Amino acid sequence: MGMTITEKILARHAGLEEVNPGQLIMAKIDLALGNDITAPIAIAEFRKAGGKEVFDREKVVLVADHFTPNKDIDSAEQCKIIRDFAREQCIVNYFEGGEAGIEHVLLPDKGLIRPGELVIGADSHTCTYGALGAFSTGVGSTDLAAVMLTGKLWFRIPETVKFVYHGKPQKWVEGKDLIIYTIGDIGVDGALYQAMEFGGEVIEQLPMAGRFTICNMAIEAGAKSGIIAPDKITGEYLQGRVDQPYEQLYSDNKATYREVKEYDVSRIEPQVAFPHLPGNARGISQVGDVPIDQVVIGSCTNGRLEDLRVAAGILNGKKASNGIRLIVIPATPGIYHQALKEGLFEVFLSAGAIIGPPTCGPCLGGHMGVLAKGERAVTTTNRNFVGRMGHPESEVYLTNPAVAAASAVLGRIGSPEELQ
Image (cartoon, rainbow, N blue to C red; front, side):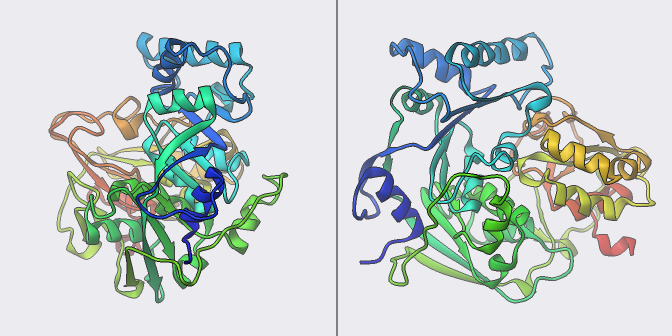
């Protein structure tokens, strides 16, 4: 019997020849991640369980990215907990301050994720790393504590649903649109505890930035993970980042899928996810007149250099509409530096944007972009639940960077085509 790439990775890490959906396994973990919100709870549980040393100081990663730079005393205390723990345990991969970035962009860019690996993180968007052909999934803080103690964690083998994308994408359509459209099709629980495997010629031609975006939002469909088989584009991204050997795994031709869904992307236009669910998707032509107050370009979903270049291309020579707060957040210090070097900051500043340091802040309504009652935001983030970015009576609309930038200029949700 053939196996999917997900099943192969989990089988290898459990020391088994093969596995089947529904099977319970205990698997070795290659990398375990915590941030300034989730790691303090894990550290407390680690100590409560009698933990003295983490299983491997090179395989536990701690990143201060959600409430940093610290916005108040409570967040400062949270960060101090992980800082002190990192020093005590001699954690090799601890990132804060000028070295910290949004975790799910930072770790791949630092070369900490390799194809074929099993990665867990106490953050739901850990599924991002599936773009590199790894099995990665979010877990709770107590599970993170268990991994810090033992280096192992139990899993139930998920069924796999394969999503195949054919055709030629329309102008301005990118990874964000494909995943929003897909979630709109299957629903926010359409892939509950399943592995979403993405393929087809469109995915094979998609740059890494778009692949990361797609896998990042697998959790928004309720999935356990998202994954894309490694190929030449993956290898080019890893070159110069990863200096250790890795195993590239692929689904067998006779692998069993719960379902195979196919999409003709030529029929998909830029998408907007309306409040209050990522699956509430509409094509840009169906949006209507929706005035806005704020635009955020950034996050682990779309804060990469490629995203900033797209936004700058739209904003070049233009200004944000009067009264629109435009916030741009490069995802890592490296991206920040390169964007500065390429002159993108000049474009953003001339357009009236505020450029923030690498942080998750606005995405979770933490700081640096919190919405007031009745306000509307267009954002390149991944969630638009009630109160996600601030007041429970605010509204969040999810788009790709091009639509977000165009909307900032228009003062309403709109297409880049309107600015041509």
